[in-house]
Amino acid sequence: MSNKTALVFGGSRGIGAACVQALAEDGFDVAYTYISGPGDIPERIGAARCAAYAADVQDEDQVARVFADVARDFGDAPACVVANAGINVPPSPLAQFGTADFRRLVEVNIVGAFNVLREAARNVKDGGTIIALTTSLVRHAAPGIGPYSATKAAVECLVRSLAKEVAARGVHVNAVAPGPVDTDLFRAGKSPEAIQRSAAMSPFNRVAEPAEIAAVVRFLASGKASWVHGQVIQPNGGLI
Image (cartoon, rainbow, N blue to C red; front, side):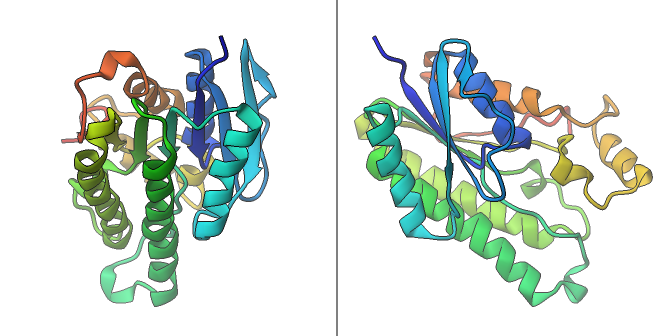
């Protein structure tokens, strides 16, 4: 019997790469997308097969092509889709926030997530799972990050509606909203002091490891989460 297939958008590094690893360890064959490069994920993780596909989530045709290519290459539609692809920009007070930066956030984080979630709704197998990555900062206001948080709040609205729309097919839809996570993207441009301020947002005084977020995605993709639906799960180390 062949493995079920998972498709991770934005899976070449950071949280996405950790999701690829976790889902493969849980018995999925895993397809994943990338923009700048496929990363260093091996073609096999244990018994699971992994394959990379170039795709820009801003382009609906590229997103649709990935679903078609995965169905062809793996012999079936994905049973799990993870919408992880997204960007951030340097924080700035709203009064000084650049229009170009805001448009970039909207095009990738909202339009891109819309493209992925729409195709997932059309293509995921009955009884499958759809999981979107957002952020705990939707519920934890901080200066400078309003535009970024707003784009992730929009994704959560899409998730909640989609959960109502595909339930008749037995498809579970949820969001995972981490706090700060130790990735290259998180560290880019941050001073040690800024990283420590992020760590101090948790009473454990550290930021998460990508594998800790992927473990939640792994749970939601499993049969153990059969009664979790339409939820936003916050693995954030007590950022409340």
